[in-house]
Image 1 (spheres, rainbow, N blue to C red):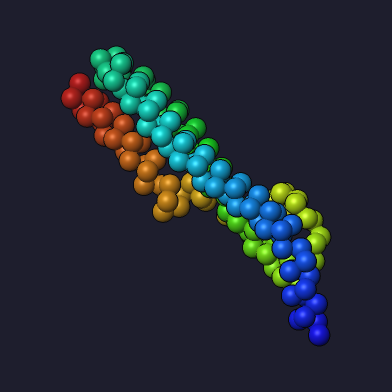
Image 2: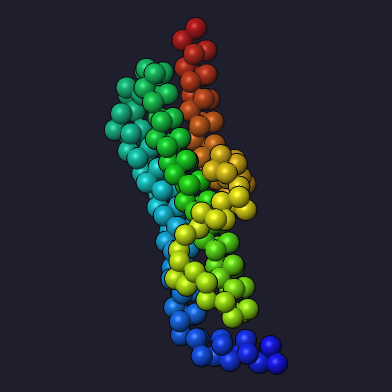
Length: 154
């Protein structure tokens, strides 16, 4: 009898539940797109700086070190958006579970913070297989160039 009640509840509130899940899914998609845009901006800005300030960059090691700033900032932002995306995925899973049980508690609530403990920290996400290789590559290249400049001048 309880199963029939849940099925009737879901059937009666199908549109409400679908709209809520669509909202959460659109936030997840937006967070994923933000992460992609952060990577594109990082590549664009670092490439622009290298292309237009190449002579100065390769003559002054301090300027080359300054390139680490935008890379680090974008790396952090990418980790932030990936963490937010994961929190919203946890929210999505919790909402699906609640609605299947016939519970409309927190309907249309888009607060992912209760799921913060279920998701890794930004710093751990920054060191994940997804982000580490992408952001570490330009940092390693900068360090190699710095070492080359140091030993070539010495």
